[in-house]
Image (tube, rainbow, N blue to C red; front, side, top):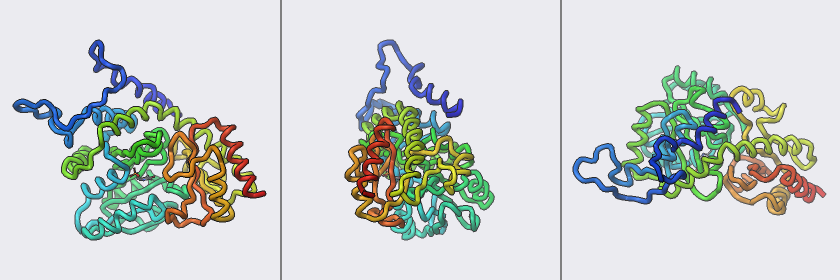
Length: 371
Ligand SMILES: *Cc1c(COP(=O)(O)O)cnc(C)c1O
């Protein structure tokens, strides 16, 4: 971890310090309130729960500290992506999306942007720069892409997009602010499904927008107020708590993923292994240049649907579940969700278990399907 990342991580646990009165609780209090005491002119204060809430403020402050940007919280990752689309686009605009990214982003464009007169095109992540960005109002990258872990050069895409007059949005869900810093590389907006590693405990849905542009933050805040797509205070409180251990969890998960991927490479049942941290992976050189860590997702193919199901379901240290980034190692056969991958394609999300025990369980389950 870089020195700045370490100092950010160190300060995170003490962000509330400085605002304390004697006798205040050290941990964040949860404010469950739809209305606030507002006699007379209450401009700038909490008035109504659709506009502001002290628990949101705290989690947004913590996220903003990690992103070095202003952050706005939403009730899910898709609520964040919707906010970006509906707050920033208008009829006649054209957007460019990854063809190999999170499936609901494409579905949102097809089912809800198109009828409002916003056109979209799809491009694979590994060749996202090819063809340029002329005519686009907004380009959206997800790197590494989910689930095949291809990468695009965020700085180069940002430069080309800006020259063409487009804004660049980066979905940084898989990397968190500790793994990759798209705003520092030139992206205008980061979106994150904090449902995943940021919260990390698989018990809430949440998301945030991060941007250093006041205009973008104002537009997204206005969208949240008017659409009512607001996070619940309790969810915000849980994410705030999850954030306090993000650095520790993410570090363990990424370190374990490096070890597990290295060993999977040598297992005869495993084909088409993808992990940006592996030398020789098509994503490796760019990953070294633009990512702080290689992430905790590993993907590979087993010989058939049946073998992939058996590998996942018979491993005692793998939860069969969609989603990723939790403290529990989990895996999913992505063809089940309609991704354009082979029937035996597995996405493995490495959790926080001690790595030797985890590897032994993974290896034993692989050995059982190849026996
Ligand atoms: C899960 C996910 C989302 C959507 O997040 P939700 O909280 O499920 O709405 C968006 N982008 C990526 C990359 C994701 O993995």
